[in-house]
Amino acid sequence: MDDRHSKAQSWQGWSDAKTNIRHFGLELQAPFSDHILCGRKSIETRAYPLPPALLSSSYHHQDKGEYQQHEVRIDILESQQGADGVSSIPNQTSVALHEMTISQTDEDASIRPPLLRKGWCTFIDSFQYTSREQFENDEEKHMVHSNSGYGWSDNRPMFGWVVGNFRRYTDDYDEFSAKCNNCIAERRMRSLFELKSD
Image (cartoon, rainbow, N blue to C red; front, side):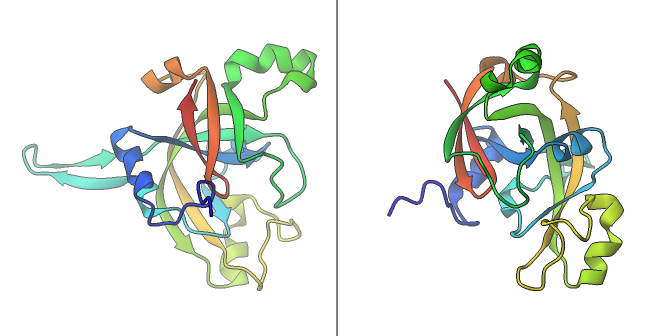
């Protein structure tokens, strides 16, 4: 059975993000992508935990005698707004930088690529909500209303991924972005995609 699109939490490939061998992105429907990138949404909610290797972490640098941050940047991949909890994105698809396509998409939505790379963020914690009360008390942080299809359900687990740093690609480009104006995104686990340059 081909499991390329449903990797386990323990998949070794997640660790390659720490050394920039692999680059990953998270699909978010509009407008939640913008909410993260403007700092309004500080917790992303999912029905599964973030793979531990994708968490950014602090460590003590012995030579420098100080704590430093090890960032794992995850691209924000914006998909068009659709039905709650239903991805319209195939397992492998094209993705483009937002800035490269915005003028085109304003004129003709039919040529909009399935995913737009709007920016990146880091996650510094992944925790499980244990009650409806705890989840709903965080509404200002995750921006999920109780009557949303993404809201609390007693029938599924709910996790919070705490956002650390974030940046729009109109403000900041990195080496990978420069060579990945048009990328292929391949699903690795649910809404997490691996990005590959053409």
